[in-house]
Amino acid sequence: MNETLSRIVDSGVVAVLRGVEADQLIEITEALREGGVTAVEITADTPDVAEKIGEVAGSFDDEVVVGTGTVLDSETARTTLMAGAEFVVSPSLHEDVIETCNRYGAVSAPGVMTPTEAIRGYEAGADFVKVFPAKTVGPDHLGAMKGPLGQIPMMPTGGVGPDNAADYIAAGAFAVGAGGALVDYDAAERGDYEAITETAREFVQVVEEARAGE
Image (cartoon, rainbow, N blue to C red):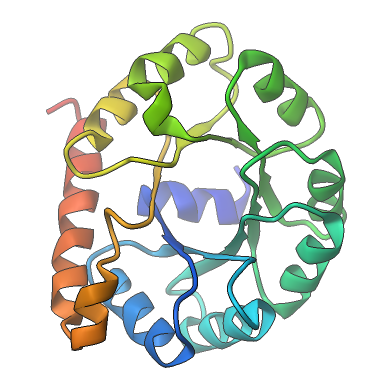
C-alpha cells in the first residue's frame, strides 16, 4: 500500500478544513493531532491555500499527512502538491486531476456517487474514492457499492459524525471524512482547542471500535 494511503488508514479519520483563518490553522491541526486525527485536508477554496498547506506540512513533518480538498482541475492539484500536499481529494470525478497526482506520485481521490463513477475513477488511477455527499445516501449505499467493487477503497464524506461513522466502517469504508462534525470553529474562535481534541478522540475511538467489530 502507498505510504500516504497507509497513513490515512492509520488515522481512520480525515479532517476537512474549509476556510480556516491562518492564525487558527496550526492550532486546529495540533488539536486534531492530539486527538488522534493525523490526516488533514485543506480545501482548495481556502484563501492562500498553497501557502497554508506549506505551513502545516512544514510544522508537523511526519506527524500529520496533509492534503488538498475540493480540487476541480489539474492546475490546482499541481500547485498544492508543489506546496507540500501529499494527497488530493475532489468532490467529483476529474481524470486530469488523477493523472496529475499519478505523475507526481501523490494519492488521489475523486468524488463519486455511483458504481460507474467509482470504477471510472479507479481505472483512471485513483487510490481511493470519496463517496460524496454521503448523507444523501447513507451507509447502505456505500455497502451496496462495496459488494461488487470490494477492491476499491471508499471513504464517505458529508454528514459523517461520531453517531454514524461506525455504520460506514461496518459497511466497508476504510476511513471517514468529516468537516463540521469534527471541527468546531466556534470553539476555535474562543480558543477552546481542547473541545476539538475531545471530538477527534471520540471520532477515532468510534472508528477503532467499529474496525474491531465492537
